[in-house]
Length: 201
Image (spheres, rainbow, N blue to C red):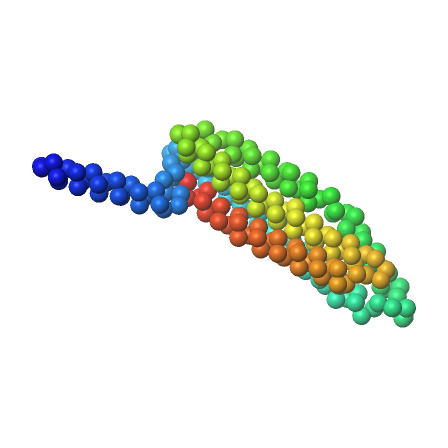
């Protein structure tokens, strides 16, 4: 084979390698064969935890919205005032019960992701692959925290606003809007980094 042909083959090989590296996750798709099943199971569990938090968030959010709709027509000194106060006290009870929950939940969940991240050397052979994996874990954890802590804090703030007499309907609605914005950011981010982690299998 002529030298020109050899050079052409080398160039084509380099181009192919560059294209491969351009595909997200492909270059790092090297979980050690004997740990692939373990990796997949652990990642599924971590994502399942976030899905459970997301469902709880939606339930609590809808509960706050429902309470605001129920209490709003009762505001005033009319015959339903006692019922209004009972509803306010119920909302305040929800806030007091769960106000410290989001931070504690996020701390516990972050520990689970850190434990997964701590197995980088177990799952990946090279330092570069391990760094890629750790970075993806950190991003996944960060976006999960936006849902678990920030979005939930806004939801419980919404209950808190309904616990006043009279209830702060507008401020409760603002807290719900902030919660929904955080939840949307979290969902988009954790989905993106879940895909990245799965691509490393």
